[in-house]
Image (cartoon, rainbow, N blue to C red; front, top):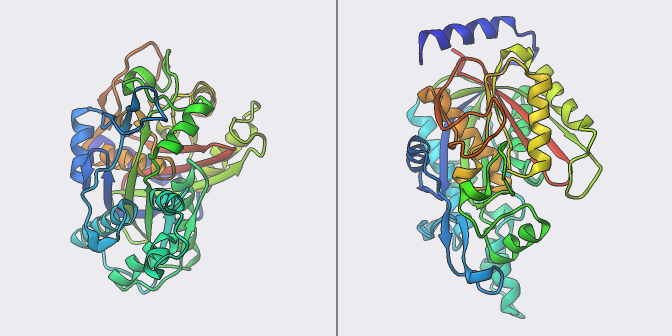
Length: 405
């Protein structure tokens, strides 16, 4: 980290008036289309190459039977469960815990867990319903339940704090982060494991998003998904499992979570409320919760799905609330839209920026917003705003800073 960045962070911290203390991300783990492990994600960000690949096996759902997707490969440990969902969730969580321990984290007396999921183990449930079995082995039935993988993880690590799953469509992982911070702020838990798991890249789900007009399956990522650029037609599909260790202590911190907020449009099942009132309120509440000033913000790590409605809304927020910000970016062309794990894998892009000094933005391929970050770019000092907007009106914003000593 450069001296200039450190100095700016200290000055920014001294100006804050927020009453709550930051929490810290002290461990991370990831399974993405790049591979099993955070190293593969880091390598993908370094090279700037998309994990989205032309994938076969979609006959009857997509013209030509293949689509551009970023899917998790079937390379997990069967001892972690019979499905990719269970294997990926436990792998990412285990990697995060081991990473935190290696960086000096010592679990507090109460370690809780918040699991960000949207549809759960959709692949296993799909197979179950198609089987038509009149009698199911109890073990198979239990493994289908979203609570089981949490129980297995907590047992493996001997954690006994509060556990729950949250769901807020594409905004779920941000909602989980805000929930975890509230537990630590209030003393409900000393530390919280955040898991975010979404392996919903099955044909039925993909076809549903395509029919809604928000997913593009038949074009390479940078042709289809160009957040904040001309010619963008929507998002490309992705899967991910992410683990993070959140703690009130600073040992080994990758980043500090200063605050966050959630609001609901309550307007339309799929669209953004045109007045953007609740979206703007969410950003303002998050900044207030973080005790931060707009001029402290350097970048917006946006939801940026590449859809005209959402991109225009977030660009308007940037222009009006953060006119001094350096830039805006979205990594969805690189990792795909990972649904309930989207905000989590995108938060790891912020950690990458804090750790390496570079924003892992995809390359710009068309005229776009004047503050769009073009490719892997040196980071300027300041806060990072992570927004995540869920279909149906879910607005979430988290404010992130460099680690606090």
